Length: 188
Image 1 (cartoon, rainbow, N blue to C red):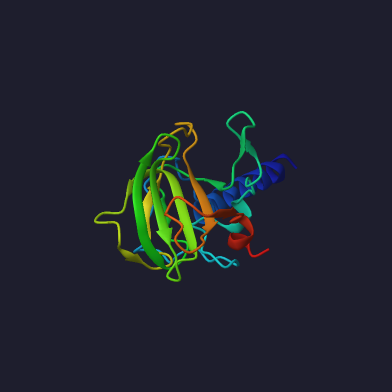
Image 2: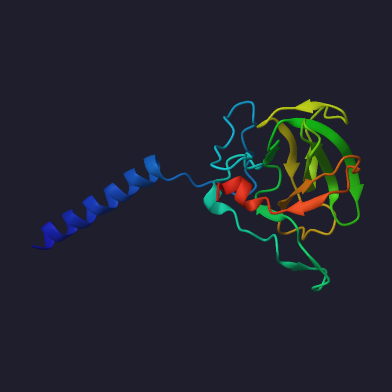
């Protein structure tokens, strides 16, 4: 009986080891991530591509109406938590309208849709894709930046602050009316 018990325990341990080696991938938080060129963009059920490489819709949280600045203003965006350096992808086709540094957003990008009626705002970026410039046309899924914590973001919590603004004719890159990007990303 004792031999049978130890044999059973050994078999369970062997199966656990085999499972861990073949089915579980443990990746340190600071591990490098694959570039957008080597991996297909993350599929999205929504009208927009989820703008962080490898991020499933199930990992998103709707923070659009959360209070910011001590309750003085609504967030008007969502935060997509991700490892520093993870690729930020263009959520839709468009043109880089403005590359800008702001006290609150830090390193930011503004992308305008081809019809001019929508601007996508990416903030707290760690860096821009090599060669990215204002006026450049970008395609949905193209790597445009990396996730960071610049501006007023907590350095211990890198994330992409992603906003969508509907523009009236003549609205500048920083204008427009904010709409909730969450349903556009998850298909609700």
